[in-house]
Length: 263
Length: 308
Ligand SMILES: Nc1ncnc2c1ncn2[C@@H]1O[C@H](COP(=O)(O)OP(=O)(O)OP(=O)(O)O)[C@@H](O)[C@H]1O
Ligand SMILES: [Mg+2]
Ligand SMILES: [Zn+2]
Image 1 (spheres, rainbow over the protein chains, first blue to last red):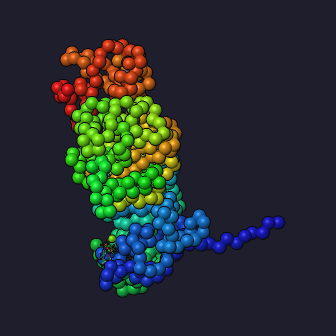
Image 2: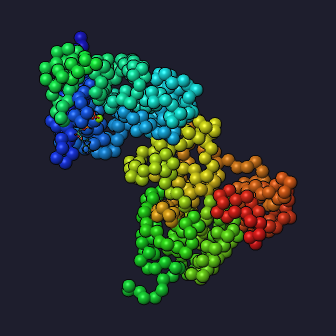
Image 3: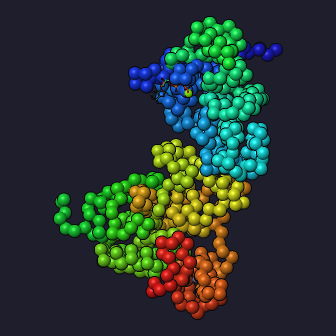
């Protein structure tokens, strides 16, 4: 008889006391949370509340002043803030992905759609043109971009297409954690809805873990399992999305939810 | 300061030391771009100021200098650089590859295999191979230091996507000794195989961009490619019309106004040496240099027809 090992579930990302100041101004302060595998965490809050600052610190784009960001790497949990830069950059192009609000920040505008999707594959050592091409074609299909646009540059794409291309470019290597900063930001409402549908499909299908910054509660409702509410750099409330939205505890969250309902 | 006499070969003592240090560092780290404080030279950028400074720093009184421009010893650019060193260093010059101890070149590697003890100095316009896709210098430096070279393959991918094959024909990127990706200067990719495992020392000087890099003797240099689109040095499917050589890099030369053309070795010394040894091609008799009538492809030495 084999003994059944009890596997202790471990968070994918474990954040403790993360703080970032810009001089005397608070970016974000004392943020702690766990993200579990397959979970989508939404971060909401008004403009200037520290959402982007927090996300940038988590993803290693900004150096926080203090705290821990422990990621469950294939070699066990590691504090990414104390990793060597080469290791962190390797993580950023393999296990992690980052979707920017403005597709121009996340795409190479002078490179074809196929080259944009293929870049991460080439960065991790794929050296077969045919297989890069096949993967790019497959991914364009998955984000609903016609395969015959594969050799067009993103500058010839609409804003919604550019954003979908950016998502394809990020997901092609099967990252384990995706950071997104206002992925539906500067898009028309109808385009937003389509992108949200697509994102939701991908998240479910791939079992993605993700942290999504937004100030659109509809985005959160649709995508996020859990929700974190920020105000003036602090996390004022966190919990299951439905709970937080249906029964907000903090006065600021109550205001946020009610103001949405009025719209 | 300690030595009051004039320096040999144009450069002042301080500059010479600084450039020699940069060269030593470049040799120690093959393919790595070493910054140096490029000096004003009595010629405009684009005329080989980087190469001239490297050559001047290497020259010894007993050296024999050869200067070529796209393979030819007799273009305006090659002639003026050769004259410059005759005047400022008084060194012997030659057109024969085998006799030269230092060869300064723009856009070619001589056909004749180089030997131990020779130095080949390349004039480089843009030393950064990643510049095409990543204009930020801070970022390209980081990519080199962390060996993040995926972007280089994006460039080759784009080539194949647009042209069906890797269309890069000049300045074809290489990896040096399994470490640094390097721009070999705008030599035709036909010359790339000669970069590898050469007994000669190869030095690269970029004046405007203030970089020196090197491929020491017997260093492995590999042209980047894809498994299913392997590197192909490719060569025009012709023999030289003057000397009959089948293995040399050829220039296409327009011979008259009615569309007549011929193919001749771009390496004028190689072609002449073969003809003197009795080889002849389809039009074997002609005895002019190709470069004076060749359609220059870069415009630095535009064909005027009356340069001679
Ligand atoms: N580079 C910076 N220098 C100085 N202060 C900054 C910088 N970036 C952000 N801040 C400040 O930090 C605080 C948090 O900004 P952050 O951009 O993280 O907010 P946000 O929640 O993402 O806002 P938005 O919804 O408008 O994107 C704000 O007070 C902002 O002014
Ligand atoms: Mg923001
Ligand atoms: Zn010939």
